Structures are given as C-alpha cells and as structure tokens.
Length: 441
Image 1 (tube, rainbow, N blue to C red):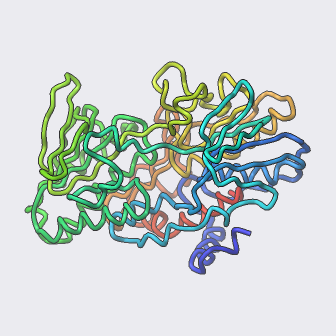
Image 2 (image 1 turned 180 degrees about the horizontal axis):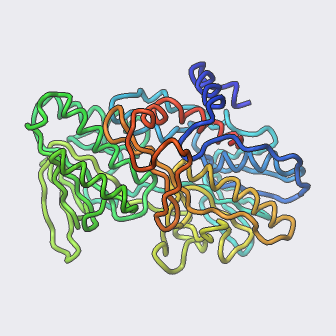
Image 3 (image 1 turned 135 degrees about the vertical axis):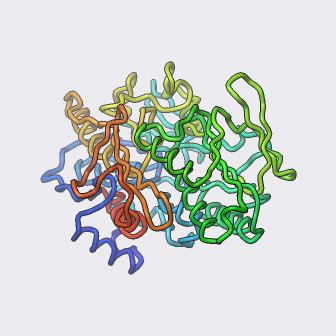
C-alpha cells in the first residue's frame, strides 16, 4: 500500500498530522464509506496526478464490481506545493518525488500512456499508445498545461539559464530557478522582475510567494538597496483575485520598495540581451531589462482537452478549459463525464486543497449518476493557499466562489500572517497531501 512507501520522515509527519488534525484547506480526516455501491460500469480516469489518484482511490473503495482504468504516462509523482520551497533554496528536489505506482489501488488498471483524443459521442478515449478505451463514465483529471511557447523566445528548457526562473516547470526547474536567483545574489546588485500571466493559473499564489521569498533573501544579503525589484501584472493594480489579499500584498510590496508595473503582459523575451517585452492593452509594447526574470507562463487545459468537444464552447473559459457545472463538476453537455482538479473551467479551484474539497463531491455525484439520481453534492469553489509573506511567515488564504473568505480554523485568521502558518506550509501539509492521494481525507 502507498502508506508503506513514505520515507521515514513522512511517516512520522503523517502521524503527527493525524494527531493534530490541522492543515491548510481543511485537510482533515473524513469518515470512510460504510459500504460500497454495486456497479459494473467501465470507468476511465484520465490523468494520474493528484486529482486523478485521489478520485481513483475514492472510487476504488466506494464501488464494488466497477472496472477502473487510470490513464497517465508520468511515472514520477510530484508534490507540487513544494516547488516554491525548492525554488526558494529551502528544499532539495528529492523531497517532492514519489512514484505514481505507490498510490494506485490494487483493483485499478493503470495504462502509462496519455489521452490523445476524446470521442464523447462514442464514449471513447484514444491513447498515445494507440489503444482506444470505451467507457460508461469518464473522469477528466488531466491537470493544466504550461504554455511557455506562447511567449516568444521562451521554452521550458530555458529555465535556469540567462537569468530566467519559473517555479512551475517541475522540481528540477524549480531547483534551476533557485540557482538563477543565487547567481543574482552573488552578483550583489541588479534588477529582478517577477511576472504574472493573464490566464487562470494553478496555485495563483505561487508568483507572489516567489516574490516574497526572493525579497527575504535580498534583505538577508545585507544589500537590498543595491537591487531594483519589480512585479509586472497584466491587470490594473491587481496581483490576486481576492481583494483583501490583493490589498495586503500591494501594501506590503510598497513598504518593501518594490515597483509595480501594471497592465503589461509578457509576450517576448530576448534571453541573450536579458530583455523582456510586455504588451499593454492598447497594443503598444514596453521593453524592460533584467538580471533575473521569474516568469509565469500562460496556462490552459492540455491541448487534447481544449481542442476537443469537451472544452467550454463559450464564455471566459471557451476553448481553454474543461466545461463543467461549477458546483457539481459534472460536464454540462455530457452527463457521463466529470472533471476534477486544475483542468476544470471554474472561477476558482486550482490548488491541492481544492482537489481535497472536489474529490468527495465528484465521488458522490458519480455514485448518484450510476444509481440514476440527480447530483447531490456541491463544490463551493473552496481554494486554499498558505501565502508565504517572508521566509518564516505566511498567512492562510482560504476563499471560494465570489471571493468569499472561508476560514477553516477559528484560531487562525485568514488575513493575518504568522509563524504557525509557515510551519504548517513547510512541515505539515505534505503528509496530509499524501493521505489525500490515498482518498482518506
């Protein structure tokens, strides 16, 4: 079982977590199902990341007789919430690595290939291996795609070279991001720019966390005044969608003498010259020089989803994200299809804590669908982000649809930073995350 594959430190941490019952995003234990529902349905789950594994394990326990198939080529599983800690020089990459096979239920068939096409009329999924799978019910959990190539001159393999960092591209690239920033520190002076994309993105707090930890490192160097630090956002006076957190961040950055460059979207880079081109809403361009550039690529559902009939056909997510009802997470046109995780086109919900909240909703609504009932469970948009405000301090940002604050713990204010939330982020969330993969929280 997966629990036996934890490194010793994670086993200890997991026990401590379960004893304390604490964690961002209400990652607390929920009762296991008392019985399993009988079904002979062929269920295909596309995506072997956090969302796919969590729902696979839940359905394995909730259903008896169903034929579960998980589709996903990635052999290594990445604990993505740890990427910011790697890129900030606090963790080594090995701390976020396990193997996909470690988290698979025994009664599930895993096909280590990716989806290449969907045919919802025939209820079929084609795979990169050449196989075609028939399904009675489909769960799309394929995550999101990093579109570095939409920035002229940029690709993922440039991360760590020519002063370029990007926390999203994997544990090795997060480590390379740290190396690029350490180069700036050794130089002792220079200009550091941090960017934000204009698309929905997974862990929307990550660009802010990277800015805050970098400011901490510059201040600790004793040469903060020698560095010009700026944050570039496509939006007007906005770096975060929830007003209370946006206001806090902008005020703190002003105190830290960070320059905000707003209404500018990164569209091209010249790595050799260390210059970045930004486009304004009127189509005009601004070119900024940098010594270090932390960039956030535009994001979307994987091409196989956004170019299929499963994508939103109209509205703000059209042609980019999986179409689902934002409350039931059931596809709005194909009721035998459900979505979970980063791939879904909903106003909020692209964090690990969101998956934790979505998984029981999707599980229950799948059980309802298979039993011929209307969906009875609803997702409220819950999203949680331990927002690092400096190395050693963080605030537990918890919110849902409409930007409503949704604090989990009465003793932790969602608008105040503290050392306790930092400890939660750095020490306690990973064991709870692994319990989520097993479908136990």
